[in-house]
Image (cartoon, rainbow, N blue to C red; front, side, top):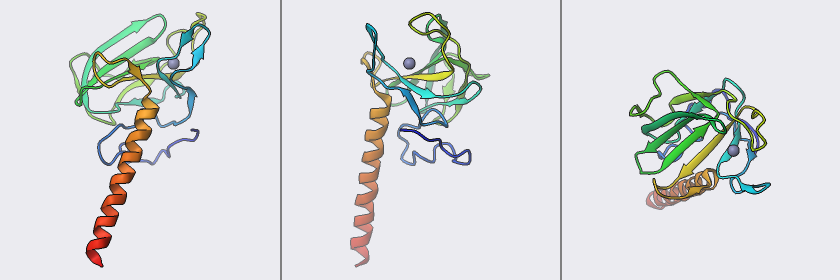
Length: 170
Ligand SMILES: [Zn+2]
């Protein structure tokens, strides 16, 4: 689960079928969803995202809120067009990112700013805490798991397409 996307990787290139776009140029998960942290369970996916790194919209949708809390620091929540909800914490909103604004998949919506604190109350090390819900009232779920499922589905679709085209040729 480590490594980076090339700086030359066009945003959205990893998601040709319009599923989830990975929110960072970094792919390294520094804190998985569901991880037990003392008495708390981690309900987001922590992704390596140094200060100043852009944060991308995982899907096209509408910004629901741009807010600040002690724990999450600067936070952006987006209602995606498929009804799912994406949230990014420790992320300063990019100019123009405000409630009610439409965003398109892969667009830079913010910048990693290291705002917010850990459970112990110390400042976080800059990273992206990304949350994901399948619907507005759904519990938070594992973005990485969802991303992987979609990639597998995509691969299956491509395999089927390859087979279909191959059969037609012979
Ligand atoms: Zn986190």
